[in-house]
Length: 126
Image (tube, rainbow, N blue to C red; front, side, top):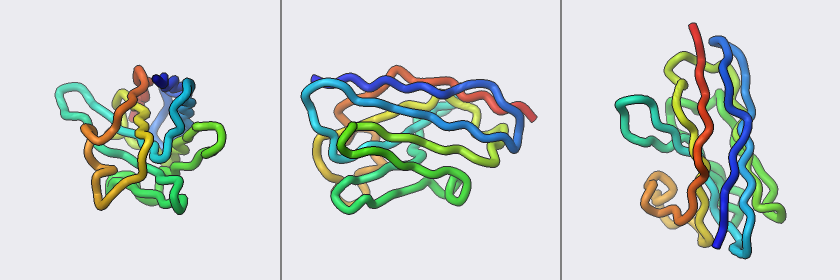
């Protein structure tokens, strides 16, 4: 089994930056990790992902150029650096992980991930 623990959320103003962290503990080795977010009244949506096979990264169009996903494969840790934050980025952010590599575009699918963190709130005021 594995457990994901996120940290780094908070309340910031538009244009500010935040860095989210997610550490996976347990016996499972994570080969792909990602971030999703869910705003009130909306469905959970994909934000960013990384596959350790070739350190390939993926981003939602809404965050491309502003957010950067990175991490440490050996430590089962992933980060999300969020710059130029906007009020529409306000949501609960969830870390997700799976002990296999992505195939095709399944990094977009919440159902593909086996492990989830508890979520961390990010609030961006205008």
